[in-house]
Image 1 (cartoon, helix red, strand yellow):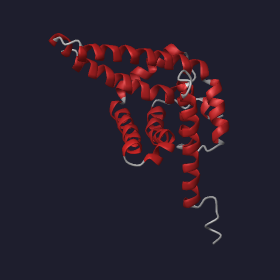
Image 2 (image 1 turned 180 degrees about the vertical axis):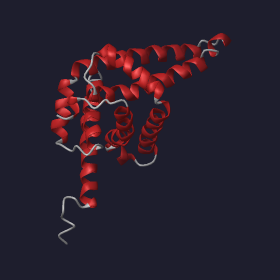
Image 3 (image 1 turned 90 degrees about the vertical axis):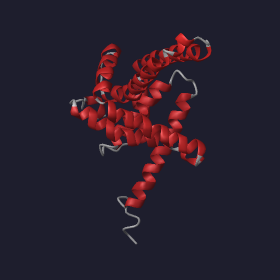
Length: 207
């Protein structure tokens, strides 16, 4: 009976992880409400999950708040840049689909490639920011290079995230309560392997 109440018991560790995923998801959803803070919220969420998947457990709320504050300016600038690119891509795709010209339809494959490149960079930039202390320009360059070099792992992360949210939306809605935190946690195993491969074990991960 004593083993059951041991905090290292797999059951309690699982319950603790679910609680962390719920708290992270709640914090991320709250950060999405003002829209412009979504980048800082994503960076803070990955700061926590990158540590969790390296067995550097801490206090979820404290670590989230620390990462949110310390990365707010670069994360917000990066997010607004990505948001602007998304709006431009969306407008171009809308024009191609509804302009009615045959010439415009020829651009759709190119838009498909651009969207894929956009998603690869979007999915990796905030984990990279959570792990690295650098200028926005340097981070964007580094992110683009690493995204291309690690195409398959990042594509797997995109598919995994989409699958979790789709299951939550159309099959089992309670999954949405932990979907952001769960997807970030699972993806962090991939991201840590990528980052460690390039020696990106920098000081802000040891706070």
